[in-house]
Length: 197
Image 1: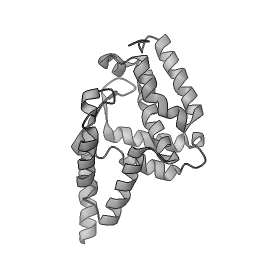
Image 2: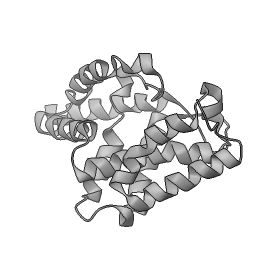
Image 3: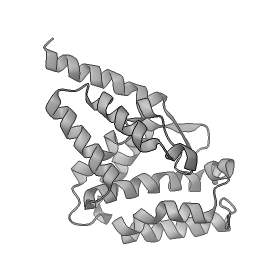
Image 4: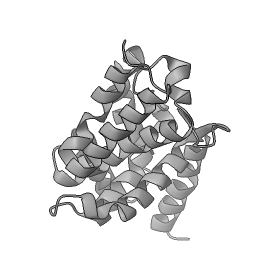
């Protein structure tokens, strides 16, 4: 095997570990926690299905790539629960270190491409990154709607926190932003989400 292929296979083997990283969000049937690989796959499918709600400038193929690799760094950095203020303090530092090691397994031009995609997602300045982030926010909301707010209830998450977390969705896609508002209202009415802090 040539060196390039050895590096590529090493990366492919390494990212299998993403299947072992558990997220706080539970599956829609509430049977267990979702893992980060499942999350990334689900987001990529969402990008395909919901592409019509993206701004015309959004590169859907690029968004799919971002969504598939955005959490690879969790292999080293772990999944940081979005509502855990303390754990989020050093999240960026942990993730940068992880990105350097994990993407560095690849041949240099592939490592650079994936690192740039990851950084574009993290910086959240382009329309494509904003759409990808909107889907990353929407997916756990949908799961909580379907599992009767189980993750919110376990962690004592309230309406104000969820609304703040969902704010990028409106900017990326007004139609999906309206959906978020309706879901939150429905979840409050159904008793899945507490109205106040």
